[in-house]
Amino acid sequence: MVDTAENSEERAAIAAAVDGELRLHDPVVRVSAVGVGLFDPEFVEIGASGRRWTYEEMVAALPTLHGGADSPRIEVFGMRGVLLAPGLVHLTYESVIAGRRARRSSLWRKGGGEAGWRLYYHQGTPVPED
Image (tube, rainbow, N blue to C red; front, side, top):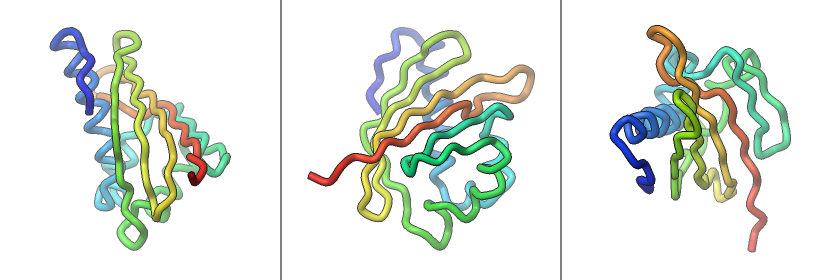
């Protein structure tokens, strides 16, 4: 990850979002309740396939999607984070899954109380082969 944060509060927010994003790529987390807890109840994803996912759809499918125990690992490259506003971090990076590259963008939102940081929005855009 490239650190572009200007102060410790900003760095902490970005680090929390990066930690959450990387945890969602961990096969053990993907099949557990921990993974489900990392999604904001208002979560939406536009996947690299073009499919739109809601919170309910993602929570139901997460254990069976790529990156799980019996599927190709998700490789992550060039992750960068920016604090857009208090409680809102934007992450960008590239991923490779089974040889397919995608550019990815995630918004992490800090919830109230003990909710912590949760994935609010995610988009994957395929990178064409050279």
